[in-house]
Image (cartoon, rainbow, N blue to C red; front, side, top):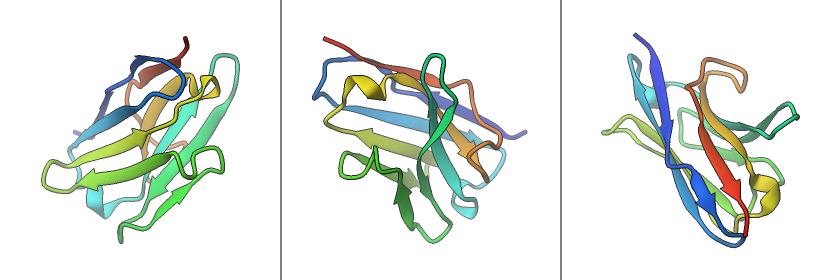
Length: 114
């Protein structure tokens, strides 16, 4: 059974950091394109970052230089290290398999506020 479980969100002050995790089961994470996407209140789904099967990473302009996507193949877990967080990063964050709009977990809430 394919399952994605996100964790690591929380409340953080502007300029702070968080590391999100996405534990995958039922498939090999490294054999799939994987994505981090987010949805802010009242807005549509926004692609944040992706990593392909070769480990090549891509970032939205809003994430470049601040966020880092990575994976641990042994743990079958995807990560998103987020630094220098801004209020506009406040959103529900999801990991997705195969496509930015593909199957994803329940999400983890990130709130950036002072």
